[in-house]
Amino acid sequence: MTAEHPTTNGSYTRQRSSNGRPVDEEAEIGSINEHHNSDEVLSEKQQQHRGGVPDRAGLYLFAARFMRRGKKKIGVVESLHAIAFSSWLNILLVLIPIAWVSNFKHWSHTTTFVLSFLAIIPLERLFDYGGEQMAYYCGKDLGDLIVITLNNAVEATLAIILLERCELKLLQSTIIGVVILHLLLIPGTSFLTGGARIMHQDLHPHLTELNHTMLTIGVLSLLIPAAFFAALDRGITPGAQVAEGIVNEEMRHTFLVMSRGLALILLMIYICSRIFLHNPPGDGNALRPDAGAPAAVKHEEAHLEDTDPEVNQWVCIVMILICIGLMGATAEWLVESIEFVRESGRIQEEWFGLVLLPIVSFAADGTVAIVFFIRSLVRHFFHQPAPPATLAKARAIDLSIQFTLFWMPFFVLLGWWTNRPLILLFDFFEVAILIGACFVVNYVTADAKTNWAEGFAMIAFYVMIALCAWFYTGQPEIEFMLACRETVAEAIAAATGGGHAE
Image (cartoon, rainbow, N blue to C red; front, side, top):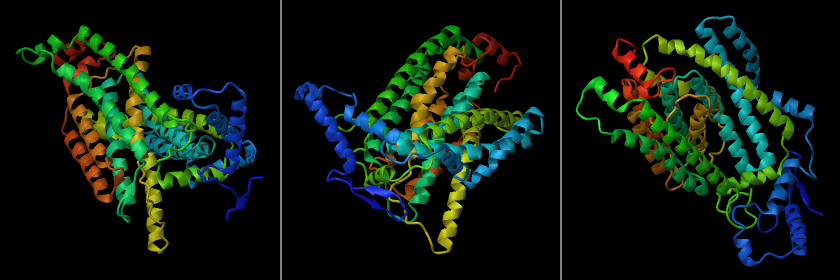
């Protein structure tokens, strides 16, 4: 019988074998291997060519973990109680129906914005909580993927709303703004605060190496269309004649075909990268932490295996789906109410998309982070500081990679389906700052270590971008190519004939 040892919180830890696996999992693997030996034995060459298909032992253990076979089952009532008391921010859930009433009753823009903004805060906290609970059933790596996807939900919903409204130029600016926010400001703040009391913090080397490649590929996928467009022969004709010469329906069709092909390739790259992370080559590696992971990662995975979750897996899934629906509608009211800021004419559309909208979409999660930071300061003031973490919090970089390799091509394909001409030809200024952000992040994380000085440099670079974007008016040629409810020629005529040209 497997030896179990009670911990201080009353739960039980499972005895582990020399290779780090719990003894009961070793027994399960042994029984599976005996069953395999009774079948036709695979040759060594066949074992090597099984490739990326997860071994049956790994899948069996994953299914056993997800269904919690032989472990305590969490009841529905117990789960609902845990969700309700998971955070004091849940008090703000009462603002969701009030925000909806404010929108439908046409209250002031400011009132609707404030109510919608506050209503999204508990929903984002429930996303985090749901992802953390699913990690008990799926493991740390898959749990992180769930959390990353849910954390991108607000920005993705915002982008879909802009796509549905045919505000494609603003959508492009927002995509770039979301990516550089998650590449520079958020991880920079994390490195700055997390490394304030420690010489350096570690990053997961296995993930960091792959992230460098994935991030670079995602960024360069925008450089290729921009370079193609820049290389076109514009001749020597000035102004509107230049636009009419190279910006037309035929050229837009070319970029639409190009963008849809690039979108499919980017999606395949992201899917392959996730398969590599969750099912690396070799037997017994599927859905298990990497052997070269830092000690803090292995300790966290062991903690997930040895302790009980607070929420039933099926209740957690239903909660996440409900929160997605509530957040989608509330985010739409948020966008509608904040547009009066842009319509006032005091803010450039580029700055609105690159800086303001991404910050507003993240501000709810940022509010949670600020509350946590204030609580940490209070604990430090009363001489009860938490020990500094040795593992740097770089999940925001994963958010930007997913947004570039998954959500951005998804928006292109969704635009194809809904007859919105969204292309991957971005403003040259936006492409330039994205390449710069990619260079800084890859350079900072190259040694899989970070410190507070590097975090401050990342924040400073983001402020530089925001400062320059304030004065940038945009590239008219790209805006003409993104004309949604009219032809390119009609958009050019409207701009040159006294229309709304930037």
